[in-house]
Length: 201
Image 1: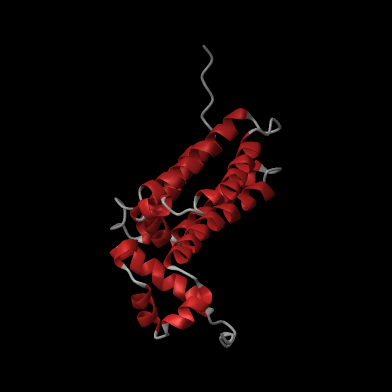
Image 2: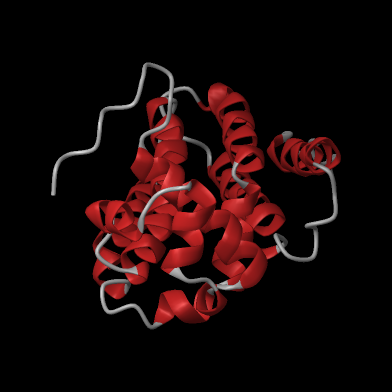
C-alpha cells in the first residue's frame, strides 16, 4: 500500500487524527459500540487507509492507553528535573494540572473503557513502562536530602491530582475546565503549603 502524503506543517498526521476521533467515539459511545467503519467515515477516509496505520481496533485502543502513560511520564520528568530544588515543586505540579486539564477526555475514556483495556493481550505487556514510572516516583519520594514532611506533602498532592482527574473523571465530567482547575490547584496548594509550627508544649 502506498505511503499516505505527509501532513502540512502544523497539521496533525492521519494517525493522530484517527486517534482523536476514536478517543471521542470510544468515550461517548463505548469501545464495543464503535466500528472501524464509523471511525473512517468520520475522517472521510477509507477503511484501507485506516488499516495502513492500525491493524485492528484493539491497536487503536492500546495506542490511546499509551497516550495516558506518556502524559504521566512527561509530568514526572518535570518533577525529577526539579528534584534538587523542592521549592520548584509547586510550579511543576501546576504544569501537571494544566496538562491534565488539557486531556480530561483521555481520563474519561480510560474510566469508561477499562473493561476493554483490561482484556487486551498487550495491555499488561505495557506494565514495564508503568513499573518504570512507579519506580521513578518512589525514588523521588525516597530522597533523604528532602525533609520527610515535604515528601509526604508531595505524595499527597500527586494523589489529589490523580483523584481529581482520573478517579473523579466521571463524577466531575460536568464541571468546567476552569472551575475544576481552580479547585484542584487549591487542593494541591493546601497540601504543599508548609505546616504551621506547633506551639511549644
